[in-house]
Image (cartoon, rainbow, N blue to C red; front, side):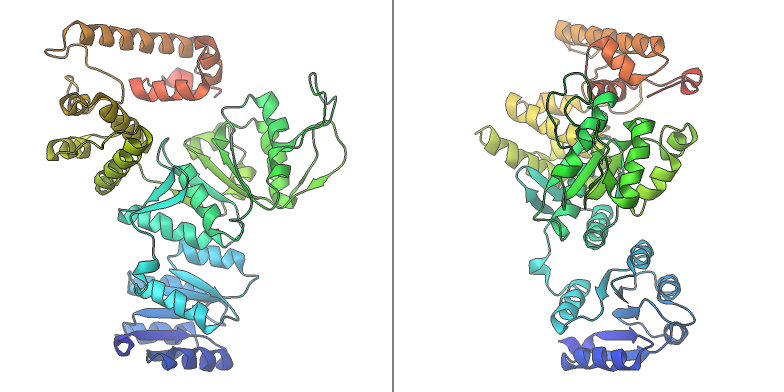
Length: 467
């Protein structure tokens, strides 16, 4: 029953304090009150351990943010819900960063208060998403580890605050999935969601792709065409691999972030849109800022809130869940019975480092389902002979015992391909876009193969690398 639940209510407005206390006591919660942040901190310092704190954001003296920070220092796991005004977006974001579990916008109804309390206290588990949360067709979010449950919680909170969100993490960690989760949980969920891969579109065409063009704006522009921002008006746009956007285009994007206006190519008229911008990248941010590859002012505009997605090797408790989900999904897609996941295979998957993250795990299950050979699948995950641990996806040691001629040929092919990539990168001073064109493969394919073969950039090339 609710008699055992203690709630600390902190608000400097006597009328609001009485109103909320009445709402809580109707449900038999035990309520302690404080009219200042100092009073709340003193009660906790003296031994009060509430199950939940409802904390006003704007108070005289020690404000809500300072109180939140100090409360969580005193009791690290303390659950705190912020009570805020509509205009306090920046402070709400700060509260989320400091560890607030949720927030309520004043004035609120009892049903809203009940819902937030139930979520914080874990009372409505039947309404909470499971480990695998289906978002759209073939898109799902897995929260089977503490790290990803935290990501899910933060995404849910920031979804309702209409600010840019920057998602960082290695390739294949699920940045696009998190972007789709934010869109689905936001008030824009019924509007358009579009993804633009800034690395997949040549720089001279990316501006037209994003902002559109008028007839005659450039050779081949026979008619006017709206860009993704116009198409996505009132919706959400994901700018994937934002670090690959040309510098001149970054300046135009900064203008859109500032006042939501831009001009089509070849036009002087101004277009105004209402688009929420999400961005994702796997680049090293400090290096990109130092080399001017990423504009500092653009970064700080995009960085209103950052979600850092951990690689799969740091959340291995999710691997069994992912394996089962991928197997079920692939079996249905290929109209085949699902194959068993033996203890031996599960152990091999847990010990492997998964440099390609979820994307590599998905491909692994696809190959296992198609080939149907568990021994071969497990062998694929075994450490290389050089003692450096598990091989990246698709690589093989030079001499696999018992591998026969097929193994020798495969190893020779890999070595030749890796050497060709090294030569192309050396020839272009590690400009990866130019190297991809030289090798006649896509930019993303080149990035994948650089990781696959573990090709490292020398110090001399780091000084001159252009992409």
